[in-house]
Image (cartoon, rainbow, N blue to C red):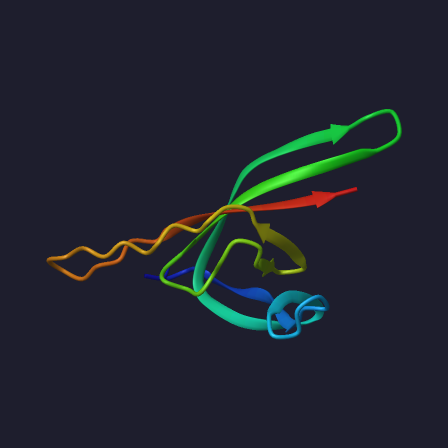
Length: 116
């Protein structure tokens, strides 16, 4: 499923490296040169913003939703939309498929970004 007037966003995923504690296992660690997957025909919608802060720090949190089809996305991946980068904050729902028609509706995937 894609939106006819949707946009292409980038899914960023940290490359895996050998664990320093157990070299036979790998851990996601390297964000310097992430794996990039283009997700065409996506739609990113604003859901909320909020101001977070205390006496020494002021921060803003922006929440959005990514609507896309069966793209390979997971919790912890990052989504680049234009110049902004958001983090996938939950477990993306599995893509549902209608058993009679094979139609797959878009999935809503929660994204957040903190500034400040």
